Image (cartoon, rainbow, N blue to C red; front, side, top):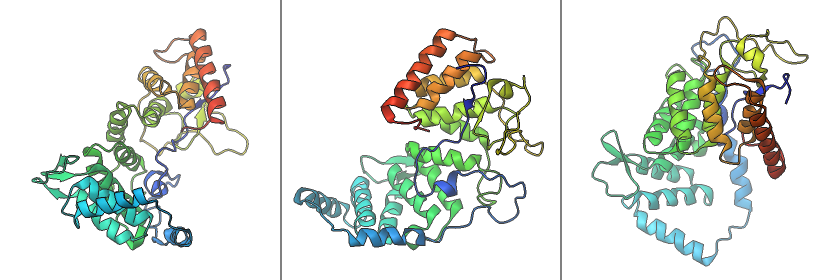
Length: 327
């Protein structure tokens, strides 16, 4: 790993759900008007999937069928335990394609009264919520699945509720929405990079390598590189060298119009990358550490031995997973 090696600061691909393009893409447009930059989905994006699933044989063994029946009975039309109603909703949506009925059950388990005694319920806003149910509800609101009217603002609020109910995936998607350019998802979606950082840290602390990596890249990018750049050399990031213009690549220099950036903190980024690399399943984090120790950074001295160690770990993971995946 020589001096010219670049640090990976590409956007993460975590939680590859159907709402990804709506919740997490960033736009390079400088002109944000009254309309959201991302067109509302129609919900018909799922029609072909539903048609394909309908043509496949519905094979459920006797034991699984009994479990489904038990969940449906326990749910008791939305009056039973949240976990049972959530599982019923999953079955209705995935196997019977009754998306509206599933939506109603996800809404049911996301918004229960405080007196609800479900063992998996979390207290949120003077009520009870089941995080996975809220997460599925928010995804449907983002995508229009099953003909549900798209409502990004409500989807954001439900992701927030799911996050506060302890669902890490919801916290991650909420953070991505908070990082979207102001107005890109509509005027009612807040833009708050610092709250997004807190959410990433929260999920990182639970052992999620993607959130650790994403926060680390925010802390490494600084004020020289634009938000869409996928990589940069250490000297470009620190300003020791001008940002190079590469052939067949968009300008990676941060626009003067873009006042939104996070102060660099390589030392904190180092700790986040160490956490992500330690999972043994995130090559980009190990790779960035190898580059960091090879070149050094503010508060992070060069360390050839560590650089070689994390280069080796990166290569081992690439060999294991068959590519530079994981981000």
